[in-house]
Image 1 (cartoon, rainbow, N blue to C red):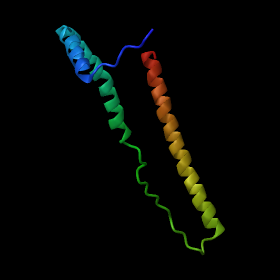
Image 2: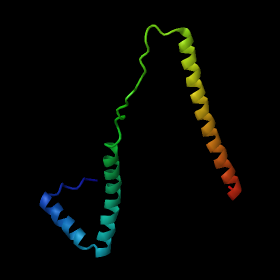
Image 3: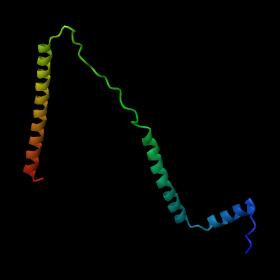
Image 4: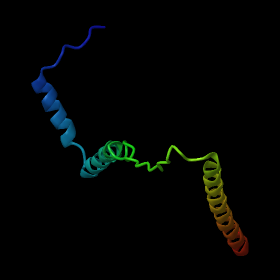
Amino acid sequence: MPLPRPASPRVLWTDLRAFLSERPRHQWAIAAISALIPALIILAFFIDSGQNIRPREEIVYFKSWPATRTDAEIRAQQKADLDRLNAARERRRQEFQRLDESMNRIGL
């Protein structure tokens, strides 16, 4: 079975115009919508890919201690830091406890 001869671009263009001219208007609308939806999704991914990709600059503050600081001063500071940390944890635990109690009252 022989293959068909290649058609010239003019014949292909004429055939394409004849095919497209036979389409009703609603098919054109559906074709436009179905091409627009994936294009919008790809555009949304493209726009989103350029946002929030770099971490924000973080400033770290630290205390400068004198070299003559004694071990007792170090231990006292560590104890004060630990007490602040435990107090913050306790406040957070109480917040969750209040949230739990309010959720139980409304039946969740």
